[in-house]
Length: 486
Image (cartoon, rainbow, N blue to C red; front, side, top):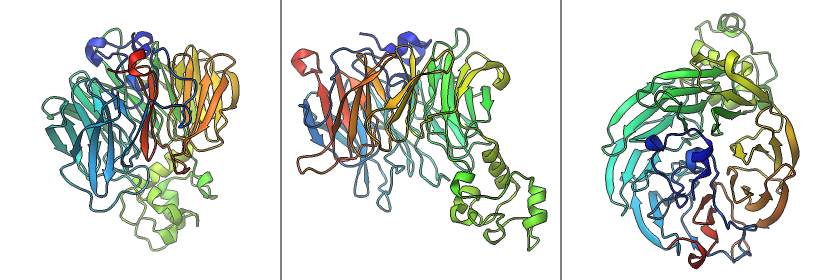
C-alpha cells in the first residue's frame, strides 16, 4: 500500500524520504495531510467498540507518531518531560527518555512544553521542548544529540512541531519578537541555516513541504499575516501571500500544485475593543500620549478594553506600545480571515497572481482542513462540517458531526472514512463523499465513567487508528492476525 499523500501531491520521495503505510512520522501524518491509503479502518471508535488495546500514559498534548519502532509521544510526569515509545501490538512501553532539564514548575494549558508532536526519519526520533530545545533519540531511546534553543517570547507557549525534510529537521519558531525558521542536520544536530521572519508574531502551525517540478523543495509556512515559502536547501524566501489572519494554527494542505491555507483569528473588535484603532502611530501619539514620552502606556490606551489583554499589544514586554507594537495592531485590523487556494510555482508576492479563490464562512479555529477524495473539508467550532469544491471554493454540503463542542484535534481520513474527535472526548466517524454522512458517534469515558479529554490528533497506520486522550492511548482496528502490526 502507498501513502495517498505521496501519490496525489507532487512531492519528491528522494527528498522527503521513503514512508510506508505502516508509518505516520510527523504531526498529522504524511506531509501533514492527515490522509493515508489504508483498508480495514473501523467505522466506530470509542471505549465500547472493542479497542485492540488501551494503555494509560502520562498527560500531554502532543499527537502520536508511528514509526517502524513503535508509537511515540511526549508527556510530562511532574516536572519531568518524557519521550515515550510504545509497542504497536500491545501498547507496552518500549522505552522512555527524559529531557535533560526538568521544568521549574508544572506545565499549564495545552501549549505547554508537551504540545509539539515528535517527528521521525523512520529510524530516529526528534522532539522539541520549548523550555529546552531540540533533542534526537535513536530507535532504542538513546540520546543522539541535543540543541539548546530559546528562551521564547510567546505568551501561550510554542506549538509548532518539528518536521523531517530529507537530511534536515525543520522547526518553525514564531513568537512575538525575533521569529525564525530553523534547519538542523538530522544526524549531527548542527545548524544548517536560520531565516529570520520579520513581521511574524506568535503562531502554532507546523510547516509542510512542496516539491516543484524544477528546483529545490520548498518549506511552506502559515504564519501571522502571511503564508510564505522558503527554499529547503538555503532558507531563502521564495514567495508569499500577505493579508491573512494575525494568528496561524492550521497546517497548509498541498495537493496537485495548489496549497490550501486556512487562516482565522478573532479580530480586535471581537476581543472587546470598540475604538477605531486604524490610525498611524503619529496620530496615536498626538491624541493619546498624555505624558509626552513618545509611547503609549496602559493608562493612555485608546480603548479601555486594551489593558485587559495588554500582552497581545505590548510585544516587546516593556510596558508600553511603541511604533513597532502599533504596526502590528494596525496589521491585525487590516488582516482578513479566510480559506485560500493558492496556485504554487510563483516567486515574490503572488497575492494578485496566484490566489485562485477564498472562502470566509464556517472557518475552523484550530483543526486543519482536510483534502480527501476530491473534496476539501473544514470543521468549525461547534462541530459544523463543510465540504467544498477544491476547484472553486463552492460549498458542496454543510452539516454537523454530532459533537457540539470545541475541537483541537485535526480530522484524519482513510478507507473512505473521516475521523473527528472533540475536546470533551466525543468521536465521530463520517463516510466521505458528496453527500457525506455520520456513521457513528461515541463518547470516550474510562472504566470509572469519567470523561477523557482529547487534544491530540489521531494517527492512522497498520490498518488502525490510534487515539490519545489525556489519560490513555487506544488502538482501534485490525488485530495482528488480520493485518495489524507484528
